[in-house]
Image (tube, rainbow, N blue to C red):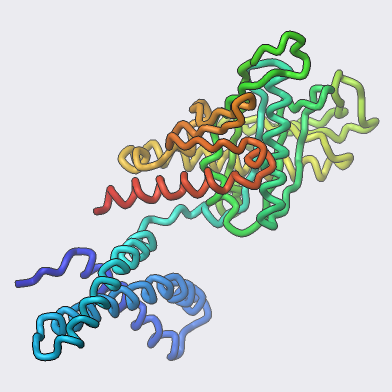
Length: 359
């Protein structure tokens, strides 16, 4: 009787392919094929190591089970029983590690990100909260050793941001920040409130994978580029030259404005970077919609209108509504220190949902 699962056969194929690649790469391979095959070999390496650990543990369990069944040496039998129970507790973790490695990879996970925060409903208080969120992610990036480069900030004049954009560069940036997209709601007493009443306002966050030119190619004929004199809060001129750039992508209707740099060339370069990220994000959203079943397995990473989190300052709590997680440490969340607790829980929930689909 064959009690091997489809997963066992899949693992066999991966181990065999890894061995084949090792033999091929040890021989004579042309430069083009070498790069491609080396990457495949490298990608399979961690999976094969995890499979080897799992199968070594399974083989050891079989041996221990045989020793437990052997009554000729009671002392050895007792030792084998103890080791068997320890190993039995370890194997589910080894199996889960292998399954997680087999989950479809999001090709954007290793990309850098474009972060956008915008004031939503709530007037000045919403703009102040949009600035708070922008600074929260700036601190979080610093804690992870990422480079956080503000690209465009539209201020309200009282410390708030109508909208702000930043480029975040580092290892696995998008993988950690992609679940931050959505509506962030705040409940607190505004500094301008004289009667101590709690106000509710909101800001939206969008985290877009930064697209390379190979990901999204933009034709010059599809762009309308306007240049004009940049202005600051209240409309006052902050530049005496026509350095501000507005790029309109005609096929999609997307518009990107960049005016923070004094150089027209730098503003155009930054605007194209944001435009490329937005177009790439549109493509990803279209693919997500096409994969309706897979979409249901996600904890919510694309719907900009979805209310994902509430920050209640009077009660000192932050609640993520997608996973019903509440932390009573709002100060540490806003400094970026406790944000990982929410992000790790979101990643774990997303992985669990995807595992449930393949089991």
